[in-house]
Image (cartoon, rainbow, N blue to C red):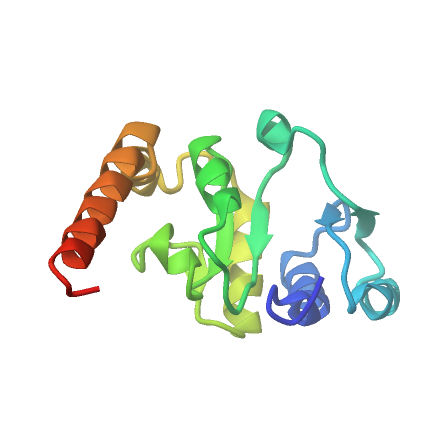
Length: 175
């Protein structure tokens, strides 16, 4: 839970979503640890009183339990190639995400549950959208693209082609 992951944005996102949705029955699981955890706990307790928050270090076998969640929120400012959005989309769980470096590799700009980096209002609106309806169908085209692009055969062939290109450059004195 740090600024790169957008943890500092969560209280404002949740407060706005709570206010806009009118929902009081929401339970949020926050996964991970980090320098902002203590402050985040306090702010959520004070600012988002109607929702219940659970802090966990990790979720064992997350890929096998994703179906239990209504959505996954990633307000990140940057990511490496994160497996979480890939797993979430393949599990048919709505993913709410910032269009951050690293996430752009997975989530396309036309996917409707994305927002600009640090856009608390838009991320809250995406969360309200998910809270207001069944969105298991969201991202079917994106899910298909992710399944094609990140399947093991495609990735292995892509890495092999890159390694061969680099090896050829090195042999030719270009690397």
